[in-house]
Image (tube, rainbow, N blue to C red; front, side, top):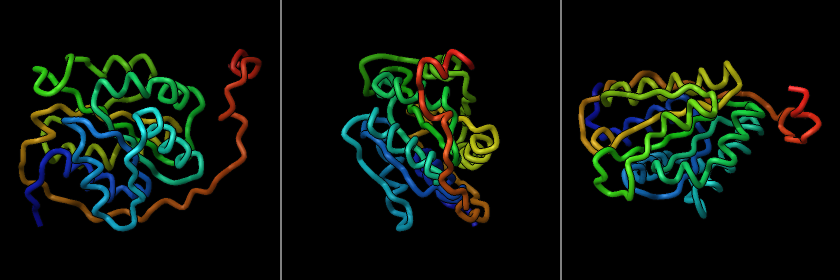
Amino acid sequence: MTKLLSGNEALALGAYHAGVRVAAAYPGTPSTEILESAARFGDIYAEWSTNEKVAMEVALRASYAGVRSMASMKHVGLNVASDPFMAASTTGINAGMVIVSADDPGIHSSQNEQDSRYFARFAKVFCFEPSNHQEAYNMTREAFDLSEKLGIPVMIRMVTRLSHSRSRVRPQPPKEPNVLHYGQSTDWTLLPAREAER
């Protein structure tokens, strides 16, 4: 059965159907509706964080603990969250973790036109870039699987027009939440002596 969804709603539904159970964000157009949509699912812990860095840290900690998680923000917020974002790509993760950066080409509601794909390249993580609403749904589901398989976060880059426009989306059957458990890993500790060995 098809649904009429905005790009942000399609992404949130894709995350829910991928088994995400923790979503954190800091509001900012064009990303705000991602968390608002995810919060409608009763079994997702959804949090407006103090800032984007805290949202990234909430999602990262949930991933370390074995729960699929998502952090969403607008492009300028990725600058604020860059420290834990780079740490996540260095230490790796446990359960699937997806970072959504909603860019604003044309400066509709932002102070610049930053391109988050360069951040993903710098962090050496995969960046999915959906071109329509169905892809926003499908790629989000795939991003969690890829993240978990490779043990690194995965970024999804949205843009204003995709985030706020609406189109038909055909959902797939939801996946069961993962059953990963918290493990003891020294890989998550960024000590200079340890990092020099990598």
